[in-house]
Amino acid sequence: MKLTPLAPPPYKIKAVEPIYCPSREERLRSIAAAGYNTFLLPSNEVYLDLLTDSGTGAMSDYQWAGLMEGDEAYAGSVNFAHLEEAVHDIMGYRCVVPTHQGRGAEHILSKLLIKPGHYIPGNMYFTTTRLHQELAGGMFVDVIIDEAYQAQNEHPFKGNVDLEKLAYLVQSVGKEKIPYVNLQACVNMAGGQPFSMENLCTLREFCSRHEIKIILDATRVVENAHFIKTREKGYQNRSILSLMREICSLTDGCTMSAKKDALVNIGGFLALRDAELYEEAKALVVIYEGLHTYGGLAGRDLEAMARGLYEATTDDAIVAHRVQQVHYLGERLSQFDVPLVRPFGGHAIFIDAKRFLAHLAQDQFPAEALAAEIYTESGVRTMERGIVSAGRDPKTGDHYYPALELVRLTLPRRVYTQEHLDYTAEHIEHLFKRRDLIKGLRMIYEPKYLRFFQARFEPLT
Ligand SMILES: *Cc1c(COP(=O)(O)O)cnc(C)c1O
Image (cartoon, rainbow, N blue to C red; front, side, top):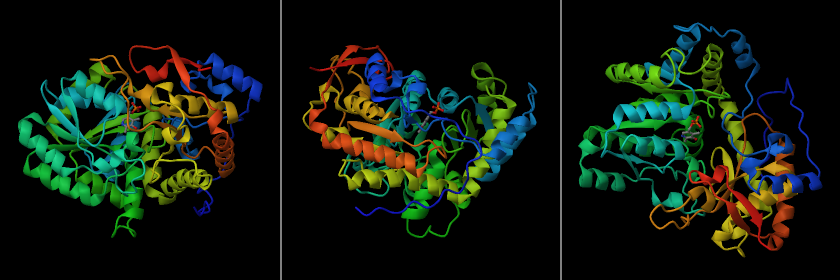
């Protein structure tokens, strides 16, 4: 595969944070002490941290300056007004409820719209989203296209909704039992895969006909807009801002984890069009998050979020460079024939651990073992997204055996340079050459819920 040269980033470095690469002996000790689970590594024992892109990005000097302009009034902070204005201007929603992060918005939305016995169709599940739907008495129904489950399928919009699956659900349970479709931008669990504008327009037409709302999970909507611009015919000359407005105009509201595309370390919001629903949302936010003008955040956080939203959507080069970095890492690894999920998505590269470690059975935890080996080899921290993350079937007690057994290399925004990406790719190449020597793991401690965070392992002998 030919390597596309990475264009220079649209920013320069003003403050630096020193990092240190532990020696091989230190790394061996650290990973053993962490029970071979990268979530349990202390961050000061990590060299490059590709665990997640959530809240790990670098803010601009303009955002940092905004922190000093935080209006920490309990009620009516001017920074809230700035956020409202930004969301209205960029996304077109008039009603904004700030929350401490994305799941706070999901909590309020679920309480607001879901009644016991409801079904919530969505383009693949996301952990916190599905849990809040279930806690409100609803049931998630996956209506993503089948291609999303095929690691090698090159479909450019694997995040698309399958309208036939949706129509079948409406027919079987009735539209009264479907409060909204939850439409995720750049579907995380599928590898950061976008939906197309064409698919969204068809979905809008269908939902309007059946009087079903569309709620956008806008967490990665800027990256989704970038893929529409670069992959969908007829959108090449459009700005990210105009695409943002068009996407949002086809939906009835959104939940947002601002820790991703809005370029902040903490924050989120729920946005709505319907003024009556907004009144109800304000009544709920005050119980669970804080008054409706701060929602569990400081005034300075609201300001950084308003500025981050503008920055991410008015300088198209920011998201373009971010996605190019991800693709550069993917192309570097492909040059060494490391098996990856295709096509590359917006926020991360996913290694196919089933093919990387073909000699291991899935219940020997290949992706967990590979993430541990990558750390030992390089000091780079990655994350398992396979059998450990999938958990157990509550009925049989056996593991779920997911089709995709992956290791995720997630790039924080504006944090690492091309040299860091080269370092990562070269070390994974070394590992790939001696992959036959990598051993599986045995689980020696298993928490009851969300086991991937805290499970402990030891190497099989
Ligand atoms: C991160 C994320 C969330 C949850 O947001 P938090 O800020 O982590 O609570 C919801 N949906 C998607 C798609 C996400 O990536």
